[in-house]
Image (cartoon, helix red, strand yellow):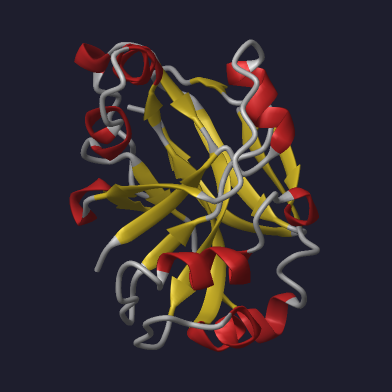
Length: 206
């Protein structure tokens, strides 16, 4: 199982972190996380204090259900069967240092526990995945809101693009990007993630 993720897939978030860089991506910006990054909803996220500031990034996550290579965009919807909301935790200072040196983001994005997953919902129950609101609450207050119609690259476009370079396999996960509103977490905070009106993610920072 591999975890694929898309960076800078919401324009407002790109401005939030890179306002002075004039970034205009014509293709999805991809990175990966190892399977040791996964934490399931209900399990605590242990804050790795030695990595500096850790930011939440709330995202819709798609689960791949078929083996696929060189998938045409019009057929991409056949290759996923469930969605959830997840957190792409990021060691922000480490990421900034890596970017400044033109180095990969691997450690800042792929450390253990950095991919928290909610409960998956079948696509047929959720409707049009490009028309879904989602949000994150911390200690009962909403801190981040997004809507999948604001994606720069749709899920189907991302799947078609990725499959040109690597084979998608059953059980692979795709983090589809985070909207504006990312921020740091601290010990004892309670995080709850919602996709539309469904709470799918519930865990504490320890």
